[in-house]
Length: 250
Ligand code: ZN
Image (cartoon, rainbow, N blue to C red; front, side, top):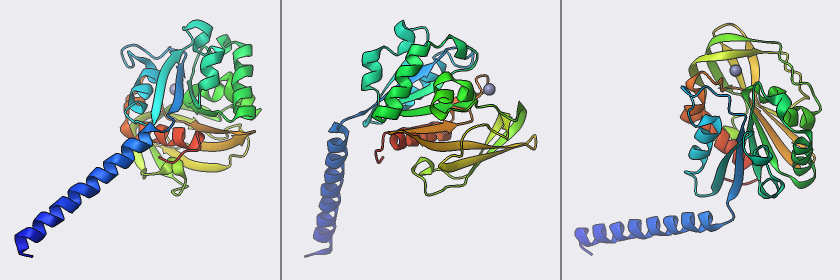
């Protein structure tokens, strides 16, 4: 064959390979989607998060064809978690701050049952260390050693082979609240991330547990008056955690 013919053949092979890959991706997307409920108590300031943390996270997750995410809130009927929705849910993401006490105990019971007995995943974000379902799942108070203005937050990947750290390396958020140890939770299975702050504090900021049949992840960053929850790296970690909690490979 002449050189040009070889080039043409090479090109057609590349095109064929790309088509095969695309086909595989489409095939994969046709599998059962991971159904995610992104819950918020919706006290995020409107000027920072007009659609809430839950709106931002759900929009990001929905770019992934393997995920179907829905933003729900405490203001919806059944506080956003009617039984039939919770029953279909593969992973529940939770952000609360000052309305923890309003969350109905019968709904917390249902969440705990779905995780422990039926393997639903649960992801608690930032101030949700005091959320009722988080406390109940870990049987712990979730107290912090301190909280305040942290200046910059350095997020260190301390379990680089963990699926939640996939594609993530050390990065810095320019401005965040600090949380300080001791964090009153049970010994985690894996500490995926540790944060150090410009203020001199440190905190275990990405932690995993198995609770009955389910998987639980706590992720620290995300103060509601700062742009953290719009940061692509933060959103990618949350997406990785969705896959891990759902026991699926990205
Ligand atoms: Zn905060």
